[in-house]
Length: 309
Image (cartoon, rainbow, N blue to C red; front, top):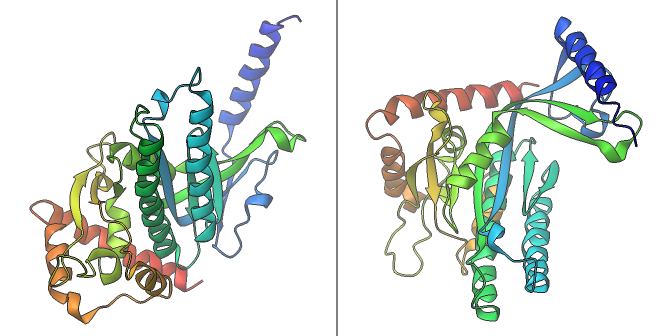
């Protein structure tokens, strides 16, 4: 095989010059008209979605899982974790799913995108607790592992990239903050945590089923479930880095009922009024008051815009 390196680099230089000489077309799509299968591959056209929600699930400690003498156990752990994480994203209606190494991400852009995405994230967290315990019981010497979850939202540009006329070598790419920031949120999380950006929090903070406890167990009344969390590696000038973190999982007694209520669009539990107020207050401590007020206004305006379509 001859490398033909000079020809390759020359062809790349020509392509770069051609691409940068003029800008491609950007077509704004509604959630109803957007279709991943119809993303252009050769045509210089990108499709824009105003607001999607990205859920990234990241397997903690996966790089420490051996592929030598422990190859069989590592393979078993990967299948038990990744297969089920993908199944959860699919179950909650992810519009696009992609496996990346030891994790995966799902994109949601329908009317209930925030509710579906958050329920999916909590469900991954919930089964991950059981998964981690079972892995430890079966392989006590295996690295501690389990899922960390990150969720972010915002505008994206999408296009299919790869080798023309060869679908096996093509993938859609999602340019914008959602997937990138969701990955950073998952990286910031500890095992069993779910971290959301300020943009996501602004869309769910008034949902009592998501933000306050059910009061089962030791609680006498509902209490706030989330804490403030700075998302590392998100630029300091970007307010999205002011995230929130959830450590709780679905309650074994009422988790399904809560999940059903969230997906149905229910938001209010009268018994949670005080806890809701405390939760919102905690998310607006100090400089966060200005940040969250702006994010909330943006969330309301974006939803109104999408609902008018």
